[in-house]
Length: 378
Image 1 (cartoon, one colour):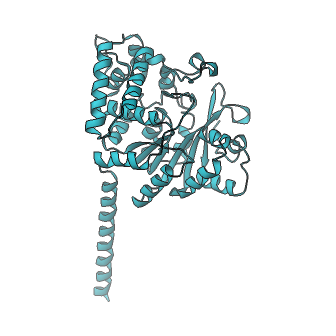
Image 2: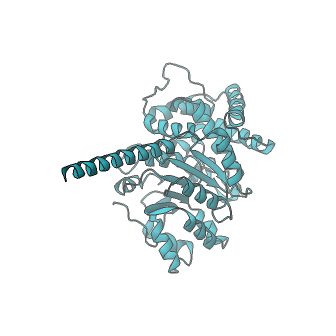
Image 3: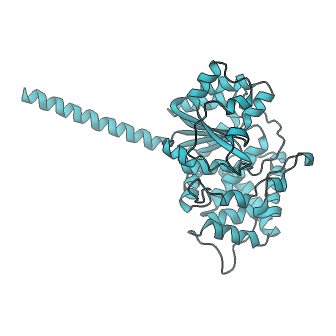
């Protein structure tokens, strides 16, 4: 009997060790660098034909984007796969949520090119100071040069007065183009290169004062929108700077994920027939679940274009859990309002969203964003 007990004990121990090794191997595999050729292939094969949007969207206009950080920490939202849309605000969510892989989807081909520009900047810049210097085409010189541990305030003060350097901008553009095509193995068309030059020149011209602009002057922008500096200096609910550029550790996490080719930009429509379904298949094949889907206010346009149901079907194809959440941004009006913010950032469980849609609770966008969202702490 004792021999049998020892045998069972050893068998259990061996099984436990084998399981631990298997899980460790799976975790290690999930952290591996995706080869550049595969990264480039995913972009090409997952992308749909590019479309139009009413803004170049070079930077975000969502001033309340940090308001949900405490609640996401409280809900233990972390790891897994992240899906997002739009420009730099994604890096902050990625820095805080620590996903294993991230996909950034946008209907515009130009947004993909801008994210490849950002990827090149992360690749070429070992710290936040270098990143901002390259992005804004301001050389790092003088006795007040920010260090690796400098506060975000010092970074912004430095780059708000540092002069733009046209020669540096030209060399930056050439190096970014080379990095995208050679290191990332993503070919650029002439239109891609033209947009890359336009984007970098806009950051060169406006510096930290760059803001969201609509394509039509009649729609406004400029002073009505937060500047890049204001977004970077924005504080979280605890009053602490929360941007990915506020912390050397946050910057490094995003940079490391980029270096592993695990932040993948693709061109696609949320309601399209290909991109989200391709991402869903990839995530299932690699045993990932979507922990966070950041949709900004894209669903408003899906309702306007009468394609919202197609988006819901794409969401249903994604591998999710009961704790998977949406992050949304909506106009800050009515009971959703967050004080002085022009936008309101909201959270909702994806499982609740699917159930509510099935029950016919979403006749329009405004009803949807006011239904069963997760309340934030006051």
